[in-house]
Length: 124
Image (cartoon, rainbow, N blue to C red; front, side, top):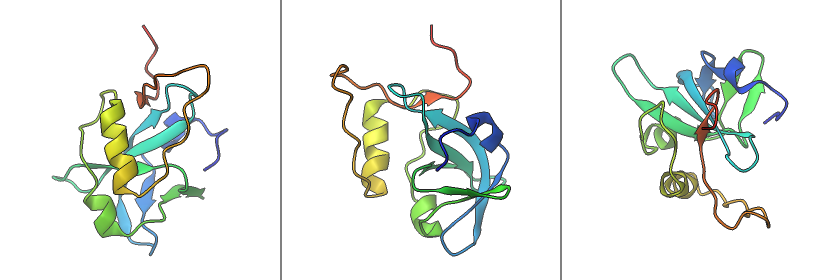
């Protein structure tokens, strides 16, 4: 996905699966702590439903919508960790495994990774 887009601008956009079926609306965007790059989005999958975490890479922003290259069933079965909280390294590993993604290498100067800072949150 484009890395120069403001992650807050994704919030409220409609999200669609690889077949063009609407999944829901982007609720939150999570940044990688090491790079500050938007990495995950939490998509509200229905009025009384839950948030499904989806990877922003290899998703695409097309017009006003986020297109996620996975089928709706896989997305809806993604682990739900609740929104508004920091993703732990263990939670992010679960997401990488769920989507069968290769974990990016840790930066050489940072032996320990801390994943999933919520966009818009300032570090303390």
